[in-house]
Length: 254
Ligand SMILES: [Zn+2]
Image (cartoon, helix red, strand yellow):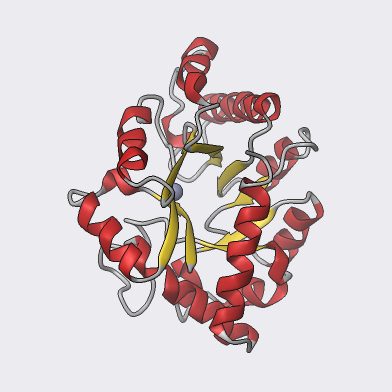
């Protein structure tokens, strides 16, 4: 059994078929991640259809924080204590498209507030960071009792060490299967096996040999196999450890 710790099942036209293919590929659990203020009902419907195999998070991605108020966030998180909601995310900072001071300010404020919610409700967080690693880390460090995952990790070993020092786990996506991703290969070898998770981020970022096509949770096996190859361990070891790690962070906090 393998777990896809981060995917977006609501972004497929044929979610039922995607979930069925994942299950027959041995993916025992998929977490469909919140990104918007109003995607709760969509994600909840997917979880209801797939009890014990699909779980969800609530969170607003930094690209979507716009002009949301605290009341908007409080409303979005109104269902945080339901059984199928296992965490807060994806939240964080993304300075790629527009690093203007006003956008940066809004993203930081929304990020902090959602960390505060995670702290209040004792939920793990999914962190998204792009072109904003140092700022992300300094905000995360303000909430030392919050735990979680840096998802789709694309930074180098130095950054990985800082994330581990804060007590977070590191999740690798299909990028680890790309030939030109040397620094992610180094991270795959560096992170202790008990701090590692695997994900697809589907429908984005399909791993080799499907690179460039639509990704789906069934392909998470390619991610695990490539990590196993890089670490010179049998794939079963990566499957077992990443599943155990996932359970330790999510089951323990539920
Ligand atoms: Zn994502």
